[in-house]
Image (cartoon, rainbow, N blue to C red; front, top):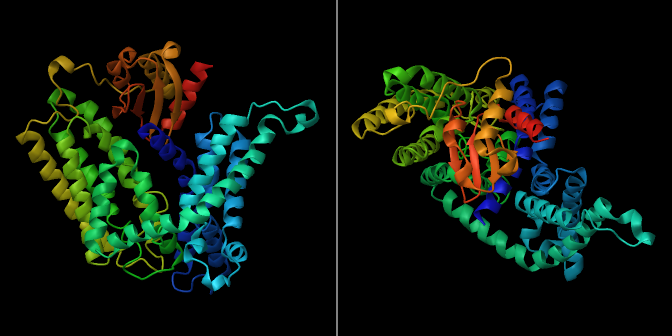
Length: 480
């Protein structure tokens, strides 16, 4: 079950990766006309509407992205089927259709059906479509129906299956929706404390990849919170909408890079050079883009207590920002780019105070991490025992950097004889192997990757960083 949920999280990365496009378009639009909502500038209105076309259709992006990501083969018919599935269920369970089925006035229909076009249903549609692709993409029908065989059969079977799913959701969705709303409202009623709890659990779930499920409740329109969508579209309360995003900026832009500096300063002298290259790249990624996994995975498993402290500090950061109603938002993650783009949005409230908060958190992270590392002799990168000195080698450099990295990593994984499947998300290679004992972690780490995460008997993740796509492409060439 855990493995399946992790695959869903990986699949969500494709549609989530589209959100920065919306952030850039809307951010520039609001920079041009921050108070007129585009009314006083045709150019601003054009950009804002272009960005909202993405934000407002997140459920469709999820349906298509999950269908493609969960299918055994990355085929267009799976993505098309995801769209078909979503269209069927949202049409059959729309307020008008339900009113017709129940024979009542539309105003008397359960309000849950007005929210049927949400991220949860988009993900469900994608899962159904992927399952239909995996089951029917190679089915051969009799000659008279041969035209509809194979991949052409997938969207047909998806549509039929979604009729059944819609019938089930007719009874189940109001219950699910009520539960999600109650959960969201329960956290929301806690105000700043609720934002803090969300930030704490968000970080704790990072190692499993299940933070995406938690994020969908608060960031998207699953339980009516829709913090990202409302913030960027201006539909909300200034100083409140964005509270589940704002507190991440001080941590990702300042706190974690400072933690990386602390790990560099506490590394053994002869290992400082290699730790410096690792932390400099990881710290820059965290500050500029908000991608924090390279730093987090550097100490997540070697120092779980340190990571717990990081989760607590993240929760505190969100609680502080929410308490003072400082808000900023992101389309991808809480990095410098998103901060600049969102700082002039109508619902941004004193966003530059988050920078001041970030400077304070940088000091806290640096001195607290440095104290804990030295006090308890925590073996963060560069502090390994001398016997393990060869665990982390110098990063591969040169023109053929990614091909060399890929070759070494693939060899360390056991090559063709051991690797059964390999895929990637934003920063990680996700690999299935036959025998975990055949994996040479020292060889993999010699490429300079930030970390390795064994998530099951046959599942392993190699944290590469934001260049993971290039390494994955090179590995695919090797496998061919």
